[in-house]
Length: 182
Image (cartoon, rainbow, N blue to C red; front, side, top):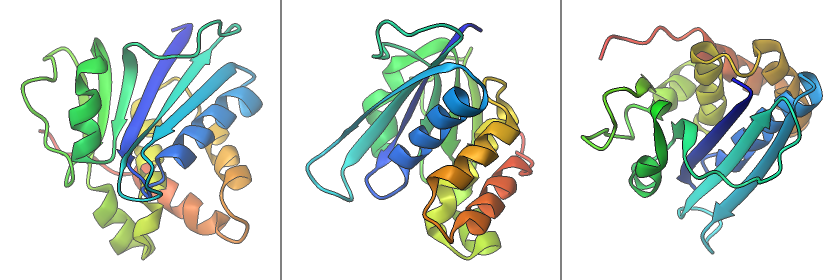
């Protein structure tokens, strides 16, 4: 695919914007692709719906706004409700399966991948705040638009100094998660 449109959504404080930054940096710096990111959020710092739109392309991007996403990564039910109708019929939906309930609005042709990222972050890492990195690992496992190594390098460059090892451990936990048949 020459261009991939990714929408990440959830609630403020869940690491939505950081996830978009990691993906965009992985593509543009570590895979020599073109990338844009646009973020949106409510007036509250935490607790309001927020989103990141990331485009990755093999050539310059002329229009950076996503109309319909190829990949929809969902961290919260409120984010799902707001953006589910903007997923392409042949797209991929990656979601936190203990926080998000899918419904009939997801076309049957969409690939759905759910993971209990919050529980994994708590039980395996001991820090719920790393659940976005678990989600990124799961996305990397289930997609082919960005490489495992590029995302790991981007995480090291993007997270606060001193937290790199913890965030990489969370990423690896998501990457190695074996999804159950749904």
